[in-house]
Image 1 (spheres, rainbow, N blue to C red):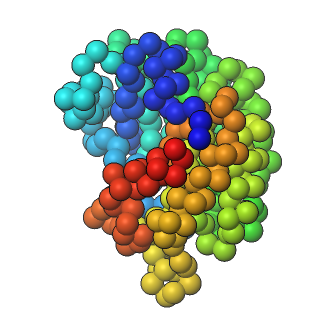
Image 2 (cartoon, helix red, strand yellow):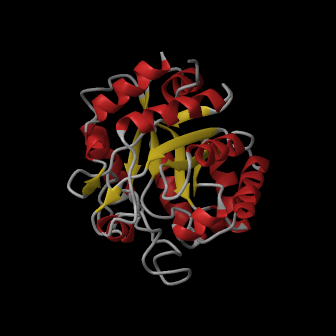
Image 3 (cartoon, helix red, strand yellow):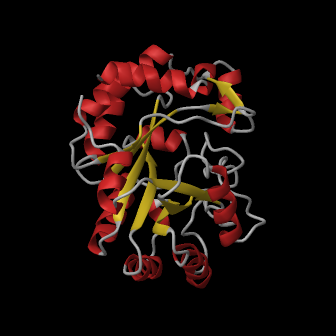
Length: 289
């Protein structure tokens, strides 16, 4: 089954192997600081979905150098994308954002900037900054949508309506920024058809898509629901079956950035099979080929 992988897209665009270096810019989130809530989304870890990001106590440059060292055995002549991953990476004064973004893109072996954020944290001042940076090096903005279904969005405490996502995509496309949309597969009370509708919807709008398996992580409110028996997780077979159908819906012009994901093993409660990433990827590849 043919689809456009992130690896092939980056090689085509930048002419070499490109690795993403995950950073923690020291930001928070309106769902954490009391603006919308204090507990975050129901599934979100204490690390703000940046459990594999750098150490926020270090500067951006220090985090980049540390991350490069970790992949030095894998990459010889390639380049890197600076990926602000943890929490909401447009949720700060523009002066602070500009300083950190520029520190990242000014590194000569960084070919692009990637920023993970919420669609409701993209004011006009932020958009103007992203436009400014995009004229220096390409910018990717990753939007955490998770689902198009409002009932699920309310349950997971997403904190904004679907039309906010629509407006954010439109705003980003007007300034030529590449949009990547995150969806979670296996959210409570969603059917396979619900998940496929989310994929179908975003593929009409987004440039890239990330499909993430729902993990139950220690310390989250979802973990408490799971321990009470209110939430079930997918089996490997169920997940692979859904992913296969998702990929069938994704057109070749939409880049597939991820077909699964792994939570930090120290915090993972379920599904435990997801900890064996090689097994999961092999199962997905077998189903798609």
